[in-house]
Length: 132
Image (cartoon, rainbow, N blue to C red):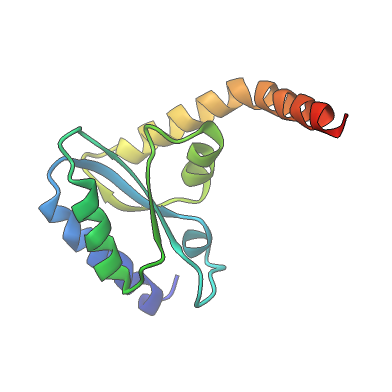
């Protein structure tokens, strides 16, 4: 990631000071992998205590990235595949305590290891039924 592409993340990290309920903020997807285009959106995921003002966090991320193409996902409520992708290519923007990302990544990987085969089979069955 170049310093120019890192600037929005630095601004986002600075904005987290206004969100004491925030426990973890990640950027993931093409921006984290480094294969984003100029028109790519920003994918952020967060973990927080219930008192987080999600709308204000989203507004702060829109300001930091200078883009209205910002997706913000509550990682506690996200599906297993999205959590796993965020854990795999996510970059930490803010970590409320040391090890917050490691704990999230471990939980995401543990769930995915247990559930992947079951989810894939259920998906295949749905496709088979839809083809009938």
